[in-house]
Every structure is written in structure tokens, then in C-alpha cells.
Length: 246
Image (cartoon, rainbow, N blue to C red):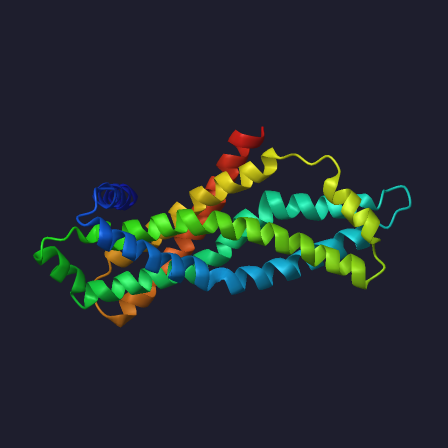
């Protein structure tokens, strides 16, 4: 019964979130601020992780493709498809769930326990829409861009491995990148990350919004937000893969 109560609370909250903003100028300013906090501030972690993961993927595939009958260009192909299909959408979002999700939950949770949300409600402001909707829109704008950036940097990381080591030639790596490329894979990756961006921001906001108590409860809400966001990301990753690729 508690599960259904939580789901009901979440749906009611989302119903309040997706309402017309009171003032468009204030709303757009908040969206811009959230784009900076959610997207721009995540550039460095996405960039670093993507470059190194692209390099590691290339090395690992090259080491396991040592048999002479396996074409070397499959190293570039494997690195490309792994980055597009799974890493730059799912794994990056798991990382962002920890960074962005915990920040959202702790920010809104702190506002709840310090009665700032109550003050907004007293002033006649729809606190759910005012606080949460800009975060969801900012994530929908920035996460797909981070996804594309991650794909590019991951492929570049593999290219650096080809240049600096002898596990694969640059020609074979580049040939593999272009071999049997399926454009829909990029679309699939973007669709997934749009779903995941809504999951991360809405679930984290939900746990922060219904935080009651003190600083300890804020920490617990932040932890729950990350855990449940990760679980839902993995669940929807399975569902979307079944729907879109089969």
C-alpha cells in the first residue's frame, strides 16, 4: 500500500508541476539558471568520463580481438556502437543521477525544512511548478546535448588510443567508425536520455519536496533520490530497448 501511496503522491505532484507558469519572464529566467546548474556544471564530469571510457573501451576490445581472423576495424565499430547505444545515454545518466539528482533533492529538501516552500505557497505561488518545472525543462534541453558530446569525446578517446598505441591502426579505427553505421542508433540514444532526464529531475524533486524533519532527513532524501533514479533508469532502459530495437 505504501508503494501506491508514493506513486499517487508523485502523480499528484507532477500534475501540479505541469501547469502554466504565473509569470513567463520569471519562468524563463529560472530555466536559464537551471540550465547552467544542471547542464553546464556537468560538462566537466561528462567530458572526463567519456574520453577515458572511450579509450578504455578501445583498449579492451583490441585486447580481446587478438585472433587473426577477426578484422581490426571491428574495434572502432564496437567502440562506436557501445558509446552510442549504452554508455553515452544510460551510464552517463547514472552518473548524472548521483551528481544532479542529489543536488536537486538536497536543494528542494532544504527549502522544505526551512519553510521556504511554505512561504511560496502563502504568497500564492505554485511551488511545485515554480521549483520543479524549470529543472525538468533544463534537463530536457541539456542532457541530449551532453549525450552528443559524450559520444564525440568517447570516439575521440578511442582515436587517441589508436594514435598513441599500436593496438589498432588509425585507418582501421576510422574505417570501423564508418562501417555499417545505423543513424537510428543516435535517435535511440537521444530518446532514452530524454526519458532519463525526466526521471532524474522529477524523482529527485519529489523526494526533496516531501522531506520533513531536519538536516539528517535531507541527506536521507538525497540518498533515496539517487537510488530510485538509478533503479528507474535501468528499468526504463530495458523497456525502451525492447520497444525501440526489437
